[in-house]
Image (cartoon, rainbow, N blue to C red):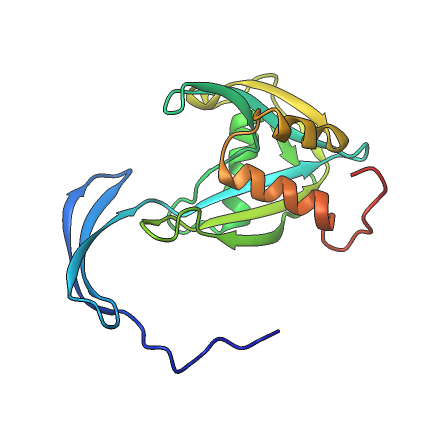
Amino acid sequence: MTEPDQDLPQWKIHGERVIYDNKWVQLTLMDIEPPGTPRFEHHVVRLHHVAIAAVVDDQDRVLMLRRYRFVPDKWGWELPGGIIDPGEDPAGAAAREIEEETGWRPTAGLKHLTTFQPMVGMVDSPHDVLVGRGAERVSDAPTDGEEAGTVAWIPLKEVSGLIERDEVLGAGTLVGLLQIMAMGIPGETVTEGR
């Protein structure tokens, strides 16, 4: 692995001012100065830190939700996940969201796969992606009605087809599914056909 060039100058951040702020989103203007470029203001959207989880059963099926998202005006499949509450760790938040959104509770600890930023040039919203093996049914219906959708166990071997048909929504879902398909679940051997 190559080391990053430490001799390259960093952008100077002279300050930040809030343009809009509520409990869901914050819009700021950052006063920045890239190397060799005049100083200017750049918009930054700050969103919550979220946790997303893939729960895989002993038949290599992943727990997913099919639901409608009004922003893209589209139905699609997603992994359960949501905002990490104050004082909550990513694994705890993911387990809570799985149960609220699907009626299933993970039976094993969720393992961290990766943390990523879905749009690093303008949006600050860390996404933790976790994975776990196994779940038990604890409710016949999701408890979070706003997030309700069709809950299903999707065979991992069918996921690439969903992606090809543009039936998977959200960067976190894509990152989690692609990671599992490429690398398997941490601590397990990748099986043929994934």
